[in-house]
Length: 174
Image: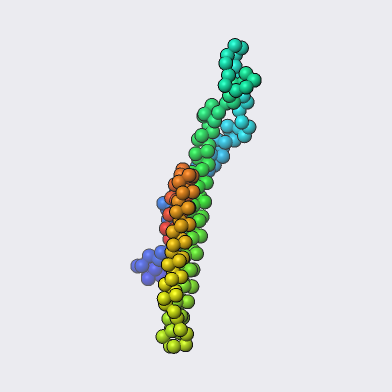
C-alpha cells in the first residue's frame, strides 16, 4: 500500500460489517423457517373424531379439523420464512434501486444540461409551462400509486417490515 493510501484510507465499495451481519441473520431466519416447515410436515393435520355421544358443529359428527395452533412449529416457521425472506428480498430491491437511482440521476443530469444548453444557445425552444403541467400530473399519479402500495403493505405488515429494513440496508450500501 502506498503512503497516500495509508494516510487517506481508501474506502471499500463492499458491504459494511453490520450489513453482512444483518444478511447472515436474514439467511439464518430463512433457513430456520424452512427447517421448521419441514419438521412440521407439509400435509395438513388429519381431522379429529369426537367421542361417542358428543355434539359437533360440523355435519357428520366429525370434529373440526386440527388448526395451525395445534402444531407449535407452524407459526414459527411462517414467521421465520416471512421475516427472513422479506429481509433478503428487500435488501436485493434496495440494492438494485440504489444502482438504478444513481444511473437515472446521471442520465437525467446529462439530459437537463443538454436541454438548458440548447435553450440558452437559442437552438431549441423549451415550453417551461408545459413541463410544469406534466410534472404536476406525474406527481399526482405517483401519490395515488404510493397510497395503493401503502395499503397493500399494511395488509402484509410482518414481511413488509422485514422487507423495509432490508431495503434500507440495501440502499445504504457503501
